[in-house]
Length: 218
Image (cartoon, rainbow, N blue to C red; front, side, top):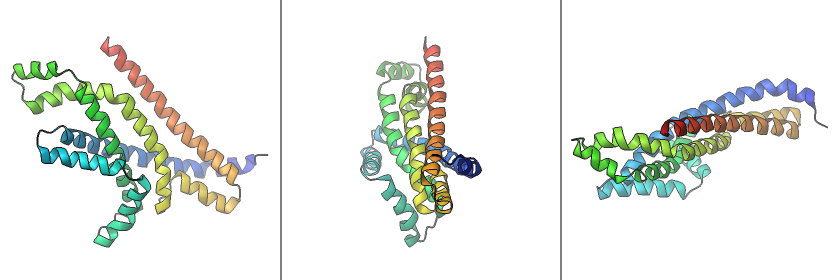
């Protein structure tokens, strides 16, 4: 039987952890989008050095576990005199990891825009950078929104890994409450419920955004 009294009593503490999880997710989302956009543009650059730099970033991040990347930043950087602390380390690791996946998503959106649009813009006297900013990227982002949204949902769940570097978000809050209540089933059940609320709400909002974009295209 579930101990509902325990659940009700400690629910506010879990909500505090949920707020921190959401904060980490949003900040990592913003920087992850920036990293992804830069990496996508690098991979599409005619300059071979820039192109290989972007390709290497995407390859090395997608080829290694997020947990290892997190430990490298939190435990490794202090050896070089760079101590970011748990919060910044967690956000940076999540942003870098998400950025690599966003890069491929954004790159796919860019190359899916018909080349005729680039040629038409150039015929109107628009330079490459202006064409990319005003013509190509807006269309690419519209097509990439479903995949970018999926990356954000995955990011929310991946925030649970930052509990390993003592960042007190939802997972670590749950573990600490288990240590004091000895009720792992109730605590983990509530944590799962709160994660589900976060990811489901995100999915619903993204679905509405996709529908709005689809209507605008008609």
